[in-house]
Image 1 (cartoon, helix red, strand yellow):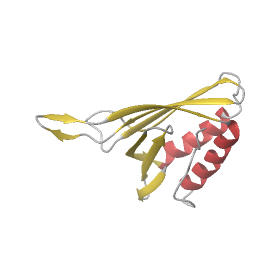
Image 2 (spheres, helix red, strand yellow):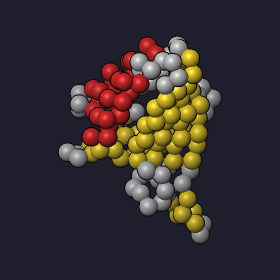
Image 3 (cartoon, one colour):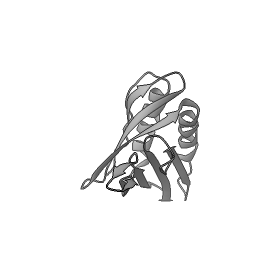
Length: 138
């Protein structure tokens, strides 16, 4: 996640997701309160290593919303293994006689220690001390 733009109410993030084969990118708008809430939720979730589930959403899906959308479902099916399903949607644009958006779903795996690093970077991004947050997939 990379900060593209911000003001006092919200931040625009460019979110790049790669599973090692495919890479998908979108831009989303998110308010600081929902971003802070996501950081708090992730901080709690990281201790739920026995079957924990958490959904994070930035932006909204559909043509009536500005910019794109991002949804990630974090799941610990067993300790030490974190699976993440990422759904991304681009901004809607005219295409022939339709208004369309590109969409993709990617499936990632990572580890609890790498999630800890991501949470620290996301806290720093939310606090305006850093412009990027990375979650490394394995």
